[in-house]
Image (cartoon, rainbow, N blue to C red; front, side):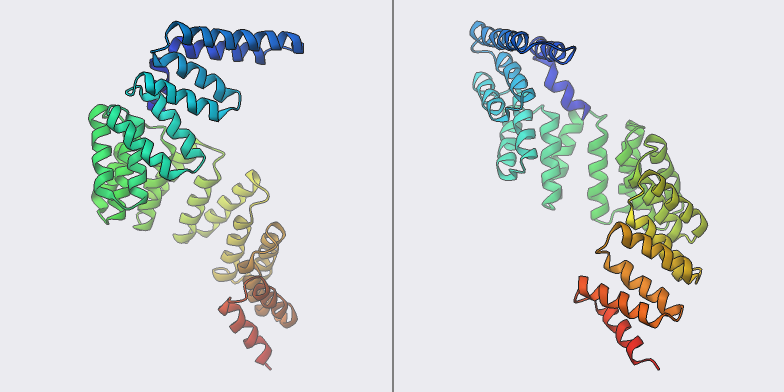
Length: 343
C-alpha cells in the first residue's frame, strides 16, 4: 500500500537511503570476496556508528533493521524494531514492519497483539488501522472494522482500500446500494485499483447486472496478462449465454497459460450442455484431464459425452475413474449404475 511505504520512509529517510545505497553498489558489477567483505564491514560500521551517536532515537535502529531484513535476517530486524520502539513507542514504522513480519509468518495472534499496541501508541498509523480492520472483517466483527476504517479515513480520505473494505462489509450484510457505492468510490479515488474493478464486477455479476462486463474489461486494461480478470469475464459471458464470446475468452486464457485445466473444462461443458457437440466436449474434457490428472469432474463429464456418443465402455471407465478419485461422488456412481443397467 502506498500509505505504508510513505510512513515507513518518512522518519528514517537518511538512514534508509544509506542502506539502499550500499545495497545498490553491492548489486552492480562483480567484486572480489575481499572487496565485498570490506563493503559489508563498512556498512555495518556505519549503522553501528549511527546508533552510538543517537542511542535514544528510533531511526538508527530502524535503519539497521531494514538492513538486516534485506540480508535475510528477519529475527535481528524484528529485535531492532523492538529497540526502536523502546526508544520511541510512537514510532509507527517499527510497529508496521514488525506486524508485517508476523503476518507473513502467519503468527496471527501475535500480529493482532502488535496491531492493538500500534494503534494505542501510534493512533495515526493508517497501515495498522487498515490491517486491524482486515482482521475484524475475517472475524465478522464488522462494527469494529468500520470503526478502524472510519478512523483511517479521517486521517486520509483518499484511502481506496478503506472504501473497498467497507464495500466488502456492506456486501456481506446484503446492503447492495452501499456496497456498490463504496466499491465505486474506491476506483474513483484510485482509477488503477485492479481489485476494486474485480470486486465490483463480481458483485454486479451476482446481481445479474450486465454492466459487470465493463468492470472486468477495465481490470483487463489495467492488467492485460491477468488470468483472474479474463476468467471472470469468460464466466460472466458463459452465464449470459454469450457462448462463442466465452469460448474466445477461454482460448485467450490458454494462450497465456497453456496448463490451465479449468479453461479446457469450461469449453467442454459449453459443448456438452449448450451445443450438444459431444465429440468437441470429449476433446476438451480430455485436454482438461491432461493438465490435471485428478480432475474428477472432467472424468465425469467426459463420461457423459462418451455415453451420449454411444461409447458404453468408455463412459463406464470415466465414471469409475471419477469414483476412484472421489469415492463419494454420488452423481458418478448413479451414472455408472445407469450405464451398467442399460440394455
